[in-house]
Length: 136
Ligand SMILES: [Zn+2]
Image (tube, helix red, strand yellow):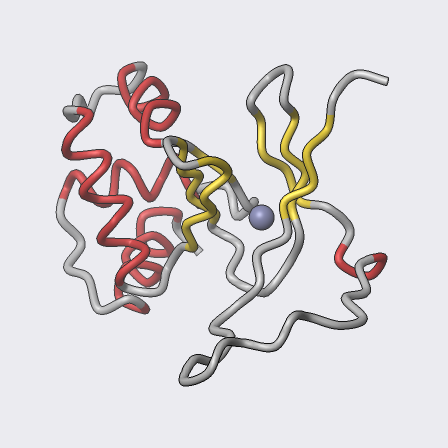
């Protein structure tokens, strides 16, 4: 299938109209069919190298829109840094402290035996597992 059509369909899955900017950013995110973890700054830098110039604010708003549409998941590694993941199933992550990269960790090896009970009146919405790595 033609890449542009695949991108239009990816956007349509989230109910999003295929604007030029969305297509350009979607192309950098899922254009090759691989999963990706990006920060807004990283995607902005990647977009700057293409013909479709977009502002950092547009990149940020578009990533938010993709998350709201259920096309991506946000992974917060620390309070100030968000990663956006094109892979939607539940899976743990490695965070490489020296490079700031976020990569998938093997889900099959993760076993969560027990979780603390949710406080009264609350329920667990989801569990994010981020394993921080440093040089051995
Ligand atoms: Zn991931």
